[in-house]
Length: 121
Figure 1 (cartoon, rainbow, N blue to C red):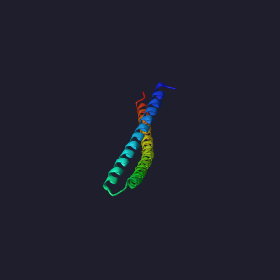
Figure 2: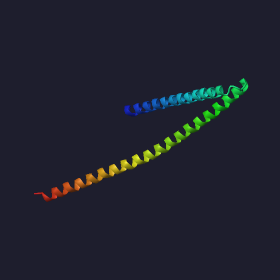
Figure 3: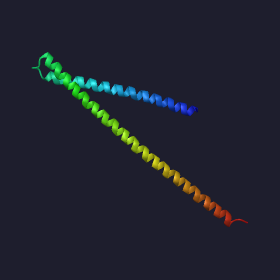
Figure 4: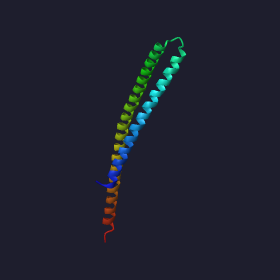
């Protein structure tokens, strides 16, 4: 295995680990925000008993967490779609560039051969 390939695998492993940590931190931030919003909402309902307040907080947090989860999943699905779309576009552009280079090379070779034939002593 070449050094460059090992380095790429190492970098990919690190970026995957960083992405996992980032995902965990985003999830924890969403949970914290849901908890804080639930408590703020329940505080506005000052007539609730302690048990009712706890129940309202639990329901609010559960719903807010579900909404965040759905949003993250929709974003991840869109990222997957975009990656496939951009990969396909990149491959098409790469093929076109290769074909253009091959065409220019063939034309240049034909011109040089023609010049060599014409100016042959």
